Amino acid sequence: DDALHIKLLPNNRVEIGVHIADVTHFVETSTAVDAEAAHRATTVYLVDRTIPMLPRPLCEIACSLNENVDRLAFSCVWIMNLDGTLMDTINNKQQQQQSKGGKKTFRDEDCNVWYGKTVIRSCARLDYDTAQNIIDEKVIPSAVTSGSNGPPTEQKFEELWPKARRPTGGHTLQEVASDVRLLHKVAM
Image (cartoon, rainbow, N blue to C red; front, top):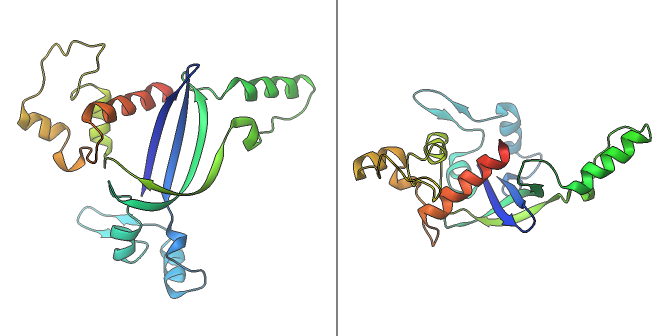
């Protein structure tokens, strides 16, 4: 499982985080589970079933980044400009290195990148279709649009953003929709 976060910062910057479930906490090296996971290499998704890389209790419970539950993760967090470029400090250093005839080299401290083990609490379980519906403003129109077609009916809303994938635990639909659109803006 993976999760994302975005936080708006001053000076047209954002903090972005990618969080991956920490399987290593539950699977020791050189064990039968480790050997089987290495053999399978990945979870396989078929039309009628899933063949997990790890035992189901690990995949579906302990290592699943379910909403409103603290979960162990490996995280990478960095700061970017709203236009999707890395902060000016790295851009300036790149230009300096290139002008000296040096190769482009990136160091984590130049990019304000942090890696580490974390405990995260996800607020919603989105899928690609739901995220795209949010980006396309089919659900929860942004404040800058008038929502000319009007809000969707409850039945249509359920199709566009299933109740099981909506935020809980204090996050509003508007907050999650705003964050999804902000991530999209930075990516574009």
